[in-house]
Length: 372
Image (tube, rainbow, N blue to C red; front, top):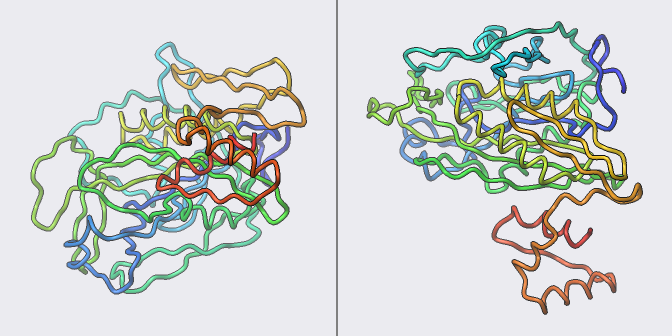
């Protein structure tokens, strides 16, 4: 084990299953940022479902630190929250957690009554030393100008480089962020990030859609408000019901693609059950996944539980080889046998191979299968 940031009394693991969770998208704090400049209130309202928007990194969560970047960067001092061990397996109380986040506004479209099933216990976290800053775009009310705000993420606080946090949104939404009129299916894709030294980190991205009501403000800007009403009744003419995608990205030194996919899928299932508790579940899963060790090579697997679901981390067979946590039969479902032989022959004679796919979710998995 190793210590966290300066002043932190929370331990972190060197061989943790996951290193960092990033949340990417748009919300009440960012507003809507169109990809093309010059598009303002009324025009954006009419073309809401046809335009493209620039996603932003909303927050980053490691084993001992959580940073929110909008509307201004700040550390969440209520993280990590600890789960009470009760017979009912109750979750953390999100309402109390939100009370400590002055810049996360309550939705204007809350349910009439919200019966909380959750309990809370918090531990104090001393903020880490701030060593350097990085830039992040956000719109002001008019959406005519954009500015850069300084955020507090630093390599001393998070186990991944700042450059990854600043650029990950382009990999989470390679086709840019698009707002939909109907709720789209949840999707998963994988990434392999390689630095200039050839070191690889692996990321699993799950994209799901949350209900929002877009409201036109007095200055012409469009602000999304989370829709917790639970109905599809008509709204005022200056409002539009829609769904905005959110991408949760889990970054790890280990290629546990399927296990990360299963854990993130379960997290999204819980979020969609209680949409207002999204950040509570993100805290719970991020802390558990970043504080779970990976097994050493051999025959010993590690099983961990989150709520009422258990997950198994399998070991690699040899110390020199990466774990295989992807279905190796995938190429046989996509390529005919003669194409598979041609690809294997090209690999053996060290020819360069370029994979092209209409579904980018397949690219990383297929290439990793051949590399294994």
